[in-house]
Image (cartoon, rainbow, N blue to C red; front, side):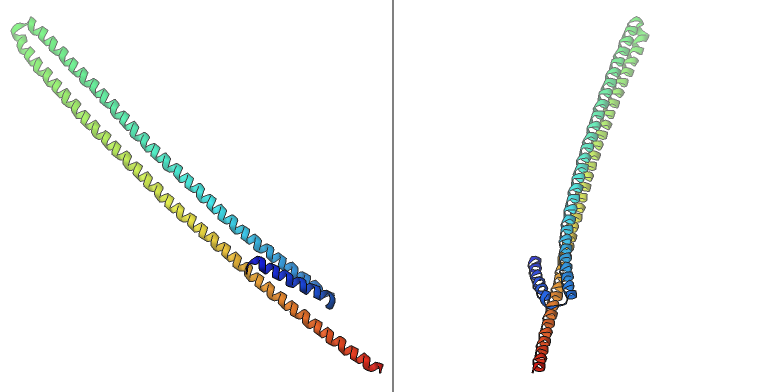
Length: 251
């Protein structure tokens, strides 16, 4: 039986009892009936308020969970953007370093060519001795150029390795951020599910408590009806007995 049906039945019983008590009982008993009806109305109000409070608690829990999920999504998006920006900065820095290394290699080649030209001019002026010095200068210049080229190649290789390591680090950071965001989202889902279960259990306890209160009120109303009926029967017997005594005295 629903709470509304129980309430209607209880109201009908109390109304009938109250109407019967007006004609047969003492005014103090009428006041007791009215007090019982007032208590029943207050019980109904408390049950309704408990149901509304449970619904409001459930709504607040759902709103809080949605807000937390939005914040987690925003943090995950920011982590992805930060990782992409770090990767872009690393690539730009590597490109800048490579350009500077190319400029240094070009200047070294140009300097070596100038040294070679000076050596050739000096060799033409000082024939025999300068030929030997010029040959040595050419060899030195070639060795310098080769060292410069080798150094530039080595620097480029190291720069490539640094760029590759920066890219790997950025990917690992991004993957860790995504895994962390997914873990946070799973924990948030578990908290939301627990909040919903708690709200449903609170609502069920409130409904059970209201039903129990209604049953107790029904029992009190039934007992009051029986008491009123017994009072009425005693009054009828007493009236019949007094009428019989009056009849006998009239003889």
